[in-house]
Every structure is written in C-alpha cells, then in structure tokens.
Length: 278
Image (cartoon, rainbow, N blue to C red; front, side, top):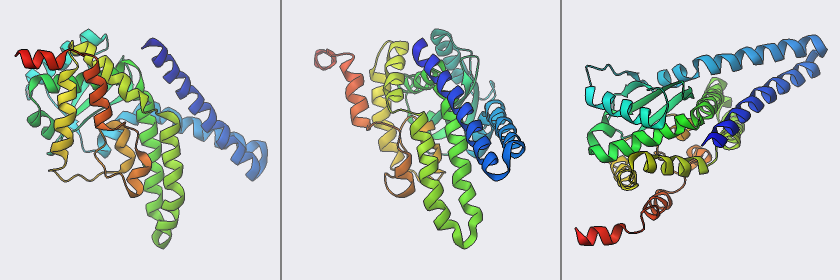
C-alpha cells in the first residue's frame, strides 16, 4: 500500500510538471520566453487550485452537502472506526440527497479527505455491506488514489464542460475534447486500483463477502433508479453507474462487477462449504 501511495504521489508530481511544461511550450510557440513563462505560471496556479480546492469542486458539482454528526451518528461512528483501523484521518462526511446508490471519496490522501454517500446507498445496504463499501472508499484514501481521482475528474469534467460553450460547434468540440478528457483519466487511473481497494476493504472488514454482496446489490439497485451526471465522474464511484456506450464509454475505469466479486470470493475459498454447513 505504501508503494502504491508513493507511485500516486509521483504521478501527481509528473502531472503537474507535464501540465506546466505543456503550457510553457504553448506559450513559447505563441510568443517566446515571456509568454511561455506566463503560461507556465498560470498552469501552476491552476494546479495549485486543483490541489487545494479540487475536492470542494467535485462535492459542489455533485450537489453534496455536509452530513452532520447529529443527523447520522451511527454512520459517523462506523466511518470513524474503519478510518482508525485503516490508519487514516476520519474523512468529513457528505450526503448526496438522491436515491441512486453510490459513494465516493475525494481529497489529498490520509491526512485530509471527504467521503460522500447517497441516501440511496445508506437505505439500500445492510450494515455489513455498507461497511464493505465504506472500507473500499477508505482504501482509496489510504493509497492516495483520491489525489489522482480528484485531479482527473476535475480536469476531465472541465474539458467536457468547455465543449458546451461552442454553440453550433458543440458536437465538434465534444468530439475532440471528449477523447482528450478520457485520456487524462486513463493515464492517471488504472482499473487495478479498484481490485486493490477491494482487497484492502476485505482485510479491513475481516471478510470479503460484505463488499462482494454490496457490489451485486448496488448493480441491481442502480438499474431501478435513474441517474444523470457528467461521465467524467465515473472514476469516483464504487462501480460504473453509466451505460457503456457513447461518451460514457470513454471513461470506463472499473473492472466488471463479476470479475471483482469473483476476486473477492476467492479470498475466502471455503465460503461455499460454510454456507452449506449453515
């Protein structure tokens, strides 16, 4: 896990360096050293803004509000207990006030993050399954996946929104900017991070079955509830809530649910015998 966290920090540093370098190159081509330096400085300011306020941008974009302790003391207690076991600071809790079952974590890593859950998620899952999902999100916090997820979603969502100012050129701009935004996401985020987070969650909960059952239930429940959001937010959620076609198909970063459930069950190979004995 420490190696993964270090690699994520390296990716973030390379992203910043590459972003500033590309901005400098564009400025140099446009007007020499002075313009190049100005472009690079502006890019550095933008990167600093994503680092400092990227989590707030995502929370605002998805309509999350802070979930006070008095509103859900049991949920706060569960997150605090799991965060202590994961050796991360307890994330700030936020609520997505809609029926679609989902959650996500954003922020900079173990020392500072935010965890959002929807009312649909909390109402759909029994305690053991909810713990599995929460532990999965805390795994992303521990590995600093949230740092890259937040940056990738902010950049990709911004590029997608830029296409909307094109008027009659919107479709052409989306045709160009959509793949560019998708490339940012796939360069920064590997599907393997989901499998690693699943394994960590299973260890944290001392059983893989809560999360495995939750993934099956969430996939089924999501088919019953309408959902609309920027497809650039796909990396945030514990499973892919979007159709795998069109623009949304460009942003797929989650392995299939069946593959993840099989990998989780394999962590406890004796579980069929245990069920028969029960």
